[in-house]
Image (tube, rainbow, N blue to C red):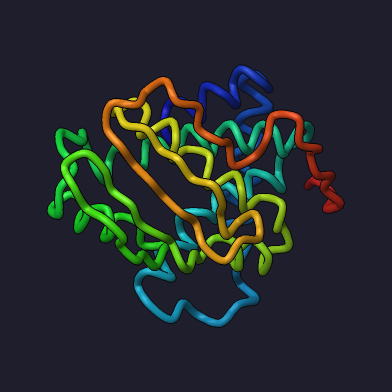
Length: 204
């Protein structure tokens, strides 16, 4: 676990409870959760997608309180770290960046609409995360994996506009990334006033 998610757990639970939570996540992972009941991955991209979201699902199941809120905050921080490692500093938007982005988003099937120096448009027409969340019994978690995108691009001096996501039930995610529009509001994957789901599964 990277430093920022760990700091969030320490802030919320203190040292000893954080250790207990991480040990619970580890035990669940060793038991094969959350995907042991599924068929083996059908591709390297499927295997990577499972590996990426499994810790968040297990953390969600292991938190003793405020599981959705805390998991969402941790996933957003971790997603921004992942995008930074995968894409690095975005100095320019061009076809080379587009190819790199396509390789980095191994959970997604992308159809490119426009690649220009000041704007990129693409649609994600398939995403592995929502069906994996449903298979793990936590469909309410799927939208939180969208939350890191806007923050990452904003830190790069770019503006992300996205009006729909597969995680929210749409047929695609429509990405528009443009330069020089830092102040334009970006719709959140989860509105601030949205009701937080309840979790029925007991904690360990």
